[in-house]
Image (cartoon, helix red, strand yellow):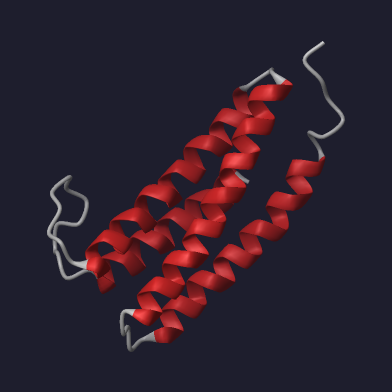
Length: 124
């Protein structure tokens, strides 16, 4: 899962960098462009997914794992919404968005299997 999350993060960074008007979109500055905001959110959420995958793998607490797994699920939904937002903002290269959507679909498929492996635990 960790490698898949890294692949998702790397693709998200590449796509966000390509679509952003701001050449320094990793900075904390806000430039007011909707596309820049979406690009920054895309990178942030993809990075958070990787951190949460690490958190799940290292945690011994069932409830902590479940919270992290839920958070990962939400972040993947957000990334799909960012793809839609970029598309509605007029991105012409929709094939890049479709590549990211496909990567999310692959990640989510593996994620569902991985999440099931934790569902029989408890904190007791």
